[in-house]
Amino acid sequence: MLTVRRAARWAALVLAAAFFLPAALADSASAVWPEAGSKTKKAGKLVVDSSHMEDGYILCRIKKASKHRLKLRITKGKETMTYDLNNRGNDEVFPLQLGSGKYSVVLFENVTGKKYSQEGKANLNVKLTREDAAYLVPNQYVNYEIAFEAVKKSDELTAGKKDETDRYRAVCEFVKSTFLYDFIRAATVSAGMLPDIEGAYKKKMGICQDLSAITCCMLRVAGLPGRLVIGYADKQYHAWTVTKIGDKEYFFDPTAAIAAIGKVKNYTVERMY
Image 1 (cartoon, one colour):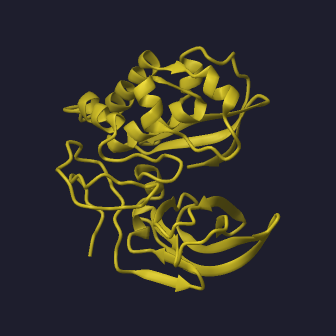
Image 2: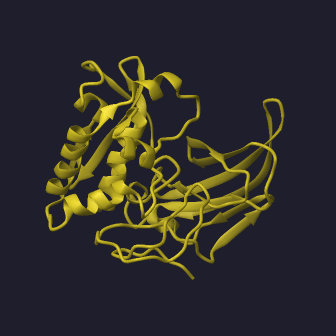
């Protein structure tokens, strides 16, 4: 059985293809990497691997590849998160960012037009090792692999820094001084497009979601619970980061830090990943 390992680096996590294999040792003693396990629930066409849900994530897939579009709805109480699920039958990592408690995971398959049918439902009783555990692991929105340049740079920047605030500042200062805003991508981005951590890192350019995802990736690799926050900066749809260290929350908006957005009076949170 594969388990989450701290201070160990595993093979490139191809989250888009959800392919997990062993690899070289990690430099960061605090990194957490998702692993498949033996504790699975099968409900209709849905398969949920809950082997490590205490660490803030589950793996989900459809039993057989489908030609149809798939949606995954994860609900706890009155809160619901909705995601696209790949139709190839490969595992994807989804965060349990709504905290400990009873979750339902429901699969919907597009039938025709805008109509979806429910094709599976699994119930989970989640008790997290820490309430912010989901913000220490890669997921569909903060999607990084072991071989990513951002991961290597995080290890380099934070090596030897025992103080968490020092690690946090090192990452944020690097992002602020290294990246530019990608106005072309911003003008051509389509609905539902996910952050591209590796692509934006290599170009040293990205839109708000890319830059925030890079920041969260680097923070998580350094053992800090970086939250990718999506909502509104005044009336503009936007993304930024929040990190809790001890009892204090640290706000960092990479787009604002590189002066690619005007002064914002109000940030309104819609959801976090």
